[in-house]
Image (cartoon, rainbow, N blue to C red; front, side, top):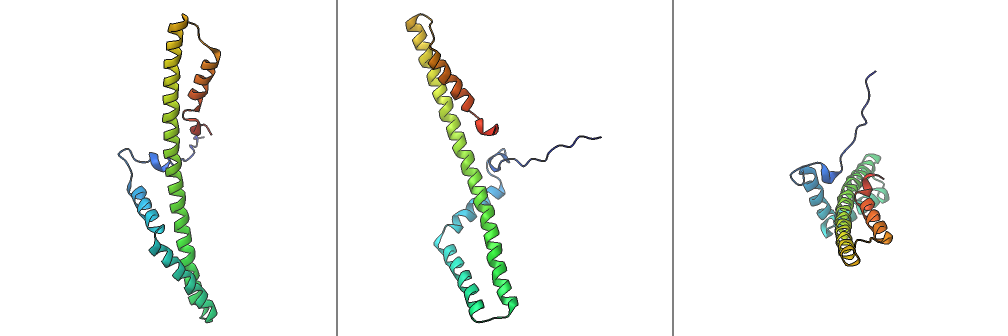
Length: 143
């Protein structure tokens, strides 16, 4: 019996080796557009059309068309929001990893200076801090 491999979709920030791919660029452009005043006006227009279609008692086909357009826009916005969220999450995690690595390097330097002054003794508290920082780096991959 052949073994099955679980299909895994890589994080959006890790899909391309040479920077952002076409989807990431498109998602960022669309995200910028959807947070603009013209897009807000477009959404208000859709909601107004939906209300007018119901108030005027237009045929069901027109009401469904306006509702379907609103649903489609909603679905696309959801995908863009999730993509933006994942990219922001990845950027924050990389920054936190860099800070933890810098603190770890600083702690190692302070320990080395302390040992030179005290003749080789090491404090248990400093060792615990170093272990906690080392464990925190890339922790999100284990969760």
